[in-house]
Image (cartoon, rainbow, N blue to C red):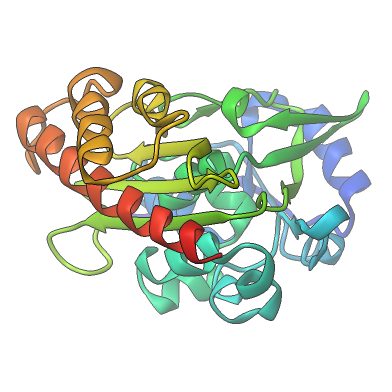
Length: 292
């Protein structure tokens, strides 16, 4: 199918983009990489009256060091760069580890970090990873700029805390604490397919090798990225050995998530996958933290 008729606009700056968003509001859709928007338009699942193409807004296409060892990613930075840019290996290794799981190279060549995050697909890897990394998002509107933590940004299926007249401009990745480890894993029927379930973990240890802080986040098991808060509480203050990790994974699968059933997997199977993936990512994150 072909998309419904629409008006096409191509601003060259953030200010020009904000002016267009103010003018058209709910009628407009932002086009970044287009790897999610264009297919939904072709199937007429989305029929925006106005498309605002961000690909000429070069001021949003960057990656640079952040404060105190963090990382700043412009919303129009391409996902493919996350696999090879040395800053990711040094300052955001969890993102680098995750990127090969995101669709296929052709998709990542065009797809952007900001586009995937703002789209808020519950099966997408990047929203879950951003939550695991405790990322923040800079949002610009005509009224000014604000920062939203990842925990407050994703509010439902394909829904975020942004207003129609606002633009995601930057992703802020804070530095990992000392003695930290990370891991990402997912299960898909074929490589590049949407995952049946996935998990990202970050574990930080104190000087006694006990868990000082942890985050465990799932994808494809809810209306957005799901933070396993009960599992994290089970890890707090413990040495993450086999028994502790399995207890945390059981809490995550039985209590923290409430997956649905669809043609791809039953809720029971998704709970099973979440349990297995939680054990794997927590083990790997702990081992990396222990060796850090």
